[in-house]
Image 1 (cartoon, rainbow, N blue to C red):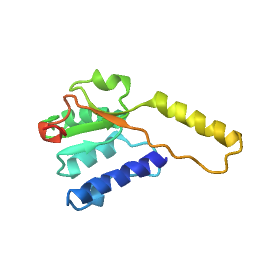
Image 2: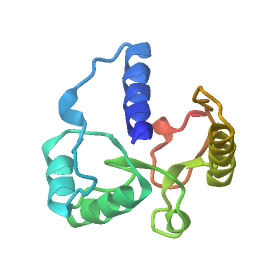
Image 3: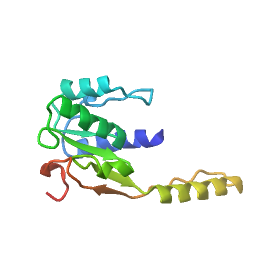
Image 4: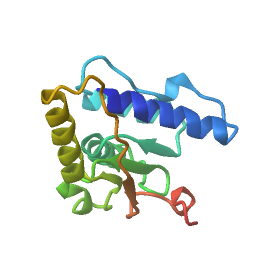
Length: 146
């Protein structure tokens, strides 16, 4: 999915603009979309990380695995999700996440499809805004306003 490519580019750009080197070993990328609990556990144990950024579903699984490994969230490891799925505010600690506005995304997709059906010869790219929803799974240093 192109969104994953864009997220990786954003990660790299943020590190570069902060003057931080990119560590490929801190990226868990796979051709398959499924990441096992064992892979997440190895990733948490194998890297001295202070923060983990992933999708909400993987973030929630990582919080459960961190608890089993006696890694405290957010004291030892901040975890940030992406998607703002319904349960992200119900887990403990509540998951800090990036909300993408799915309804607006759907509306834009329909507009692009209609334009294509009507004969548009170019593909329109629309960048939609996202919103960081700061909850309890991140330490204060992770929050943009702290």
